[in-house]
Structure formats: C-alpha cells, structure tokens
Length: 108
Image 1: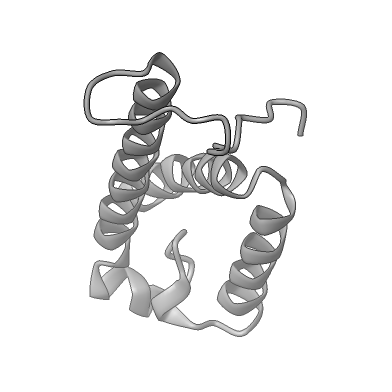
Image 2: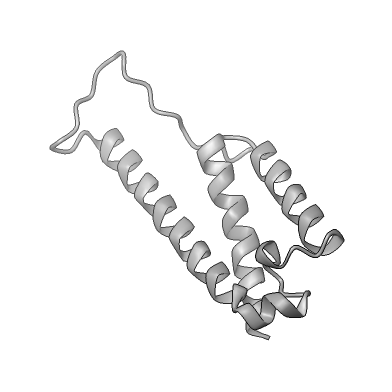
C-alpha cells in the first residue's frame, strides 16, 4: 500500500517539476513514457516506482521513490524562491535589462 502512495505522490511531482523546469510538457512525456516502458513491460525492478515486480518491493524501491519526490519538491521550491527573489529585486540579486529569467508557463 505504501508503494502505491509513493507512486501517487511521485508521478504528479515529477510532472510539475519537469513542466516548470523545461517550460513544456514534453520532458515529462518523454521521461514518463520511458519509465513506463522499462518498468512494467520489461520488469526492471530498479525503475519500478509502483512496485509491481515483487523484487522491487523487497528491495524497498518505494522508499527511494518517496525520497526522490521530496527532493524534487525541495528543488522546485528553491527555484520558486529564487524566481520570487529575483523579480522582487531583494538584496543579493541584481536586476538588469539584459538579464532574462524564464517565466512560469501555466498554459501547458
């Protein structure tokens, strides 16, 4: 049951992070399709984030999935924080007309 909860947490987190970082949905589509192909179709236990293969459940892959999802969320919040700090012009950052920062594109 914990493996399914980890997968339910991991998949949207991966989609959100890749969408924000790349500015497009294509990165998630490519990576998720690759993971989906390798995991259930070929039975690679290391990439089995849903733990369908019994060997991946025995290895505790779901724990690494949760850790990876939290690390991705922390990296995402760090990026949001950096963007907010840059746009507000707080101390430690320099705003110039030549500096460009990618904006968040919510119309994916």
